[in-house]
Length: 592
Ligand code: GTP
Ligand code: SPV
Ligand code: MN
Image (cartoon, helix red, strand yellow):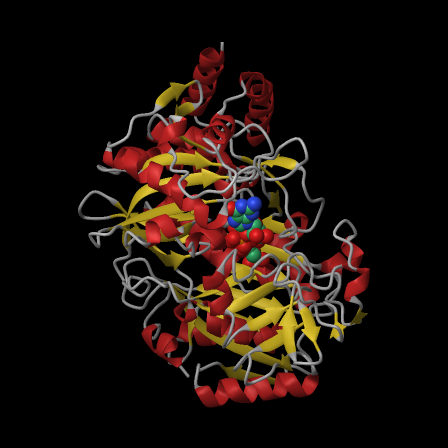
């Protein structure tokens, strides 16, 4: 165990409230992990899959009402409401502790409390922060052992550490009317109750590494962002790193593990994955912005992942993986999901645990899906064939370009470059995207999702934008900022741009702009490529005219958007920096 009294006292207090039958400290050893797997298999919490086909892989099904993050039940509990801001739900900390204490009271009776010491980031790095999660779920323990660096070695590193993020989770009764995901940034505390779904309960991820970390980042002069990190290696072996923020289920994992199209592959280009969801960014001694991925695994969207769309992600899931809410193929004891291949299993159990008849599958009717649209795989990052050799590097990687993006059927062009950091911050602040299944609620509705952080910023969004502007002033050699949209559709609602691996063609333009080796056309919204500068060699059905269409800036649509942006800024409230209102006015003027 530990001699750290901060930890011991807190564990004792939480145990007094939740009243578990036992307390088990997670050490990360093979023996303990194996024993927990056996116990969870015996209770039916997880199912062991075919050891030959999927070694060390397991399937878990959540409760049917517990399949995604619950944004309307997620709270930022700062002492002043204004510090949480209008984008976040807010509760007064004391009131929230009291309310949740009642739900936690005795919630672990008859159960074991697991104490998970973990680190976000590589031990020994300036970036790294510690956490402890207390949970009554073995599923959470097994996921945390993949998603974070966890166990006895981390607890040893925390021996003299008064600062750590205190996370308390209990499944309690999985009562959705009493489900709460609450953050107390002033106390380094997270309380999550009545859920068993990933983003709500793997507290190192969105709760700590984004909500609490974004709050700490502002205080301490760094940034926590909902960004993938990839390295693009050229034939000379030089690697440039890109960080990209897309909203949930909008393509981060896919871009992070991109396989270059043949035309680039044969020249020797390669793409390396540093992270697929979260980046922590700090100003390096050399004046550049440096990034680490604080996670240790991928909690990726399963549907749509296949040999063609994302072979690297698929390969990562072929061993040591926990699958959540996918189809169970009974004939082979393996898993399946929509979009994996054209051979749905004949004898199968759907994500709800019911027998599933693939012949009744109808794309338009969600109730016929075998896998939940937000079903996920939890995989070890090191099992990814394209994992970067900088993955464990405590200094991280220097970022050349930052990309924002979202799902927009019309307004946003395939790619454009901002005029500079301030304008780039503006571009991030006005990001919008169609909602996805990653969060509970309607899907396909356009909503503003600044920097893809709307559900994850742990303080006032206006202050967050001010922090972005501030950072820009402090970084001597800042990354250039771009915006992409892979999701423009034609008259039939089909995607025009092929996407996936071919997104590399856009990354090549972005890096050429960073090098200053390609020209661009200034437009009211930013610099747009000359259509012939996007490489379409070997791209079936895509002509220069297709690219011209993808790059067109629809002035009327943008003018109509201005009012929405202003309304959104007004909703965010008084703390929106004046510089962003100036950018908005300048955009309006340029649109004429
Ligand atoms: P979170 O884990 O929720 O943060 O999601 P993410 O941003 O990592 O999204 P992910 O890469 O898992 O992709 C989500 C969905 O978008 C999947 O169904 C993909 O098939 C689809 N997708 C990803 N990239 C592209 C693309 O370039 N074009 C198109 N049309 N779809 C894409
Ligand atoms: C997201 O929704 O952005 C995810 C999945 O990455 S979750 O961990 O549930 O937040
Ligand atoms: Mn995410």
